[in-house]
Length: 253
Length: 121
Image (cartoon, rainbow over all chains, first blue to last red; front, side):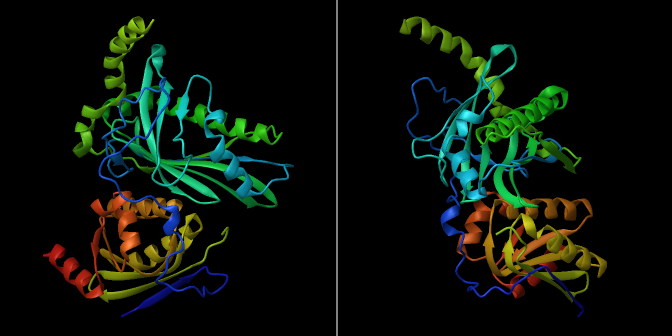
């Protein structure tokens, strides 16, 4: 028997190994998503009843993208940044995209509905589940049919005396169609999206900064075993719903 | 919690089988410790790697992300990743994030060894 040891602990932990401190921060597993009450204008099409999917359940290449902005000069703590980000999350999103947060806010287990602007003004209805939320970070997991399968983690921390705000995605395109879309223009749009979001967050603290981006291809292979995920494709289903939505609007007048 | 608070030890427990003992916190800051542990096990010739989570004290979503990247790395190198020692809470996290569909979970080290041996047959 051989043994090697990697030790990066600056201090020995004295807490009991049997009582994890993160219990309150994690959502409980769910078999199907359940959306709580939403505003009437929210289109909740591809969320209710769907399963959540992580990067292991998607189809396309796996990417880890990290976007961060330095809140240089802002006198704020990471916990304040996360509290603000959680509270006003939709307000930092680029125009034309709606995030319908649950009435109870961004908390573990809650489900939000997203109405995103797609190509040709097609509205893309999807959602996210909050799987983790503490004072310094929170994470979303996507449902079946979303453009990608994976997690988005928002965090804030100090580095070299500055507070950093960060969004990190670990994702695969959910199905072959989304993989094509993402490779053609989706990834570029997504980058723009998070750059814009982080700049808007920084602006809240009076900071005008540039977003640093780090992109890693974690797995260059696609997973053909997941090709049938296309059945749940939110773009196709949202597109099919468009005529119904128009008729409903006409009759509502 | 902006520093790593994790200890990773690797043990060769059988031909081509290593256990990676994880003690402390699996967060985004644990990357180098985990990857160093993985590299040490692979350098010992491990084809099957068993993660021991019985001394896990804390894990956040960045930590789960790290486990996914570790899994993909292992898969790309033709290694199998297994786990044991998860308490009920961490089992639920594996279920929530659907990591349990890719990493075989066992109750304890003997059953993990047995499972790995059965996989190898």
